[in-house]
Length: 131
Image (cartoon, rainbow, N blue to C red; front, side, top):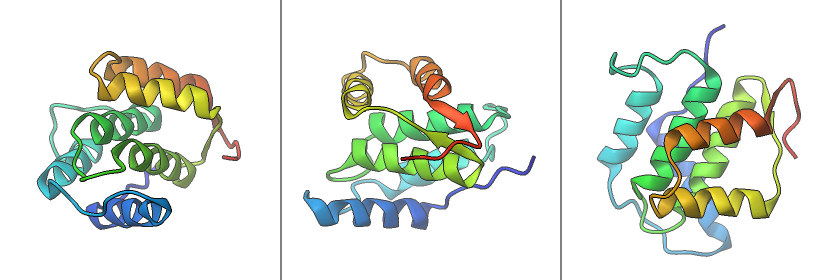
């Protein structure tokens, strides 16, 4: 399976689209976004992770935890994760409450990347449709 990845530019575009509904626009740290993309695409061999779920959890966790945008980090992380999963044949289904608990936990440093991976694994379905 060839995994389809998102670029730094695409993630910034996702962020800008999300902020049409409110929030302060702007990138606080483009280098952090670039690092996250590098980690997800295995440019750093230390990660060495093969699965789409692991890569999706990395995107969701790191975009939330590293706060690379001035505003909208959690929303951007979830939409980026959904788009990445969708591009790779997965749907992601969850309630707003479930997503909020995960995002706030990650942002507060209470939820780990491993927890995010288990959460995504539970809510993702290969061939599923994202609502």
